[in-house]
Length: 308
Image (cartoon, rainbow, N blue to C red; front, side, top):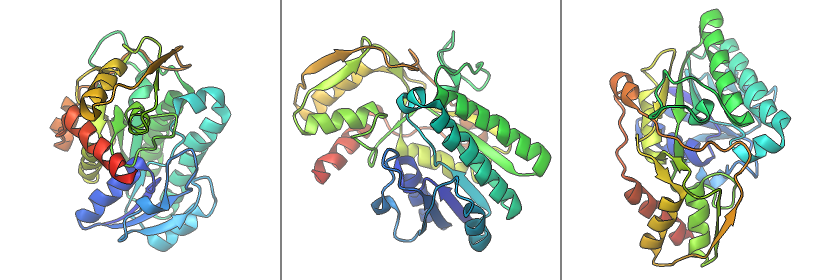
């Protein structure tokens, strides 16, 4: 199968490229290598083609026309809640207008399906846990809003233009290649500080929770979504709540270093808790998370330690 991965030089996208290539698919990575997005040319697998391009560029349709993909894996995004809260227009320009440019190019060039990186941020802070696909979506950040809006556009393009889709609502994805200098991804950020024997900042009271899912497990969900999940959205998580303080204590255990802690205020747009029941993904995609958090954190820690 011929597949374009937008954002395929990034943290999650590059792992998906690895999984697709390992499964025998032909991959073209399209990425702007935006400095705040974590996209790096070195992340692109050797067997993948590469195009340096922004998803808002009118040249996207030309790239699709030349490569003739059957599927587009759309992972290019402005992914920082903090940046989205500071600059909602910029967030929407990439996450909504960029998406529409990709969808229009897909329709024009006969793409059969889009696999879309949605987010658990579309739910905000619900009244009940765990979160399922039936949980009402009340996003608390511009980032979450744009991801929810994107799902509605996908439904429109399927109904009106025949472009199929599967959307995956990720929990907090972590693992090797995540940017330790960015504003998103507490595990990679903390690891970067621990390896330098620097202090870490814990915002709020540190008891806010997330559902941390390993990036290689997420890549497998994307592999399953190539041929399953038509027209549906799926929660992708572990069904386990983990606090920021838990992450800190686990890294102390893994590294043997007790990093000094500075406390900060609640970040704008941050939800209090998250926990995702992936039962529907198991039923319809045949996907279940395989990696325990401590094992995934050890692999991530070792990856960054070897880079140092």
